[in-house]
Length: 64
Image (tube, rainbow, N blue to C red):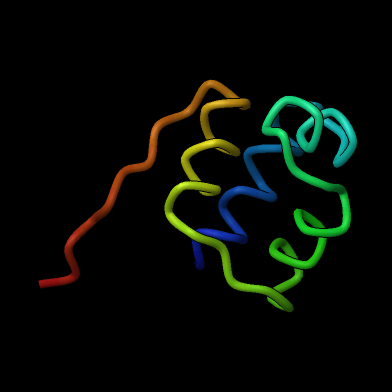
């Protein structure tokens, strides 16, 4: 599962709309929608803003 898919799943689990997440993270609905659908890459900074808006932390798991 990609980080973008995880962000979408967390947003839905939190009951947040794209608009609510966009406003909380200082981004646009279009950007978040494109990220969640794999049409646009995101920066680590934006990922942290999105996760922060949902009160989550980024956790990187090694596949070694």
